[in-house]
Length: 274
Image 1 (cartoon, rainbow, N blue to C red):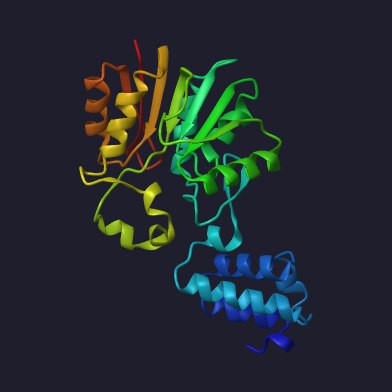
Image 2 (image 1 turned 45 degrees about the vertical axis):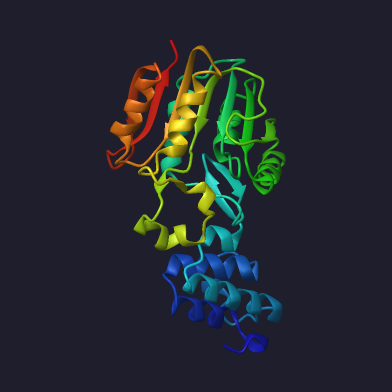
């Protein structure tokens, strides 16, 4: 495609030959800064050369597997448009189940901690539902904390942010601790497939012990940082539910139960510190 003379129709055809239509149209519209209707109603209109060059670059990146969220720089989650970068895990619909499970146990004025916040998806979703809660978001990567703050400012939501490894450096006790931690086992074949190839390994790999090393640490430490009667809510792999249930029980956490995703797979485990 000759970018200098390309029309909207040329750009749409170029993209659709290489990608599924919804992906092609999304990238073309964002790169050319036009609504999707223009790809049908104004096909003969010329595209700006710089925009056409950007579009061709984006199409190439997507053809080579780069996630749409990283190319577009954003992803929707819990009704919020969140900026995302390759420094952070891409928010996924399954993690909305984690938010829903946590919200069942959050009350006015509660202190809530989100460990491994990434772009801030879980913490900001909770803050959007409970603006009077004290929500603290932590991540070991300063780039993620900067991204979380950016997203909070974008939506006018107030949360506290800390660069921290799990509970390190925190002197508070919390009513609810929530986390979508790294839980994939080292060497898992899924790490070489799809979007996971482009996402940060530290946010994905939970250790050699079936991916449960970080979760085990999180559950153990949470028992010292939860208020009595406080709740721990953890996302995990659908094949890890029994193991996570046992980790909760071994640490004396009660009322343990699973929440199942839309495919009826156990995806989130919650429990209460007596």
